[in-house]
Length: 434
Ligand SMILES: Cc1ncc(COP(=O)(O)O)c(C=O)c1O
Image (cartoon, rainbow, N blue to C red; front, side, top):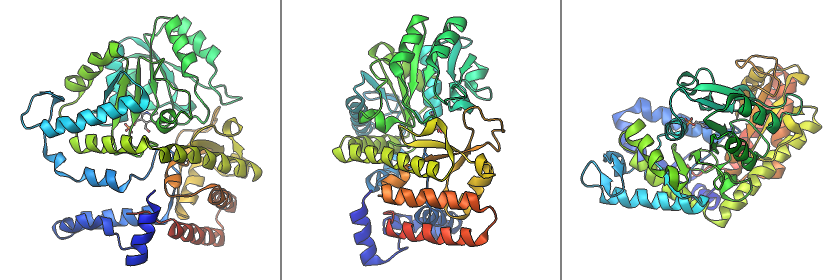
């Protein structure tokens, strides 16, 4: 990210002087407990490697707009159609964000108000289907999101959910099987998109399957939004009726979400968000979304996204060399799923061991997993955050070997101590700007 600014600031002020956090000074006196927890989290982020694929570091510009007076304002409605007075500047900000979203993704319509990814998906159901309709999405253990029809989610409670998986042998989406299920169950809505799938998704094929059975098609690109925006992944926008995404993952924006849609569904999407599901939008987040979309439209952002992929591929290659099994044999995107059981470990044990060395990951099911979701066979790694931090292939090779060393080490305290020291030394070399 802003490495130059960060290095310069540190050269002047020294490490652990969190200059940009001076705006927290008021809370230091008012609420020391909250202040201390925020500072401790800042330090944790500084001194560790973030390999959770859904996380990232926002820019100084994005973070700064989040703590502004915009948080004071109520703005139910949409630009020029508000239920409260005094919204002329909020209208400017929301219109900017909407126009930038439409331009970046080539969409007819953009709604930037969803509070987060799950409500965005809920609104897409409201816009494209009726309660009780049959809907199809990818099962959670196969890599789908809860909101794609998994049994504990509203999406399975209020809709008749049919789930597709991946081929257990290859780990890949079996499009013939999706088509077969669609013909059998005749859903009204089909979802594509995933939280844990490391290969390209053929959105055009999904759209064809949906249209062949008269279903509407929604794509959730929460994880791969940046790759879609920069042309590094097939684009669902021309073929989907609605496209949802969170803004806080690869897009490097604030915690929020957007829904893009064809003009035909624009009114339905807007009504589904407000008044259907939400009240007033979080204006400070809207402004942050505007800023992150501006940042994502720059050439540097495409270079960042390319590096994200290279970094993930490097970790995958190194871990295969160390004898781990990488689901699908590698990755086309920002994440990979690694089976750690050949090393006598489990997903949960590996996650806990990596926590000890300041490497944050999450245990995850792998295709065809025989273990439970609570302690699955795999670990999910992602590179959006470490790439923002400035790490490239050389550092990824180190990281992959540290991960392998730790998982192989079991209880060997000496290995844990060594790797933890090496991780912290690398983090010092690539400071965050916070
Ligand atoms: C594919 C996908 N969709 C939606 C969401 C939900 O986002 P949120 O946690 O903001 O509700 C996630 C979260 O990780 C996700 O991976």
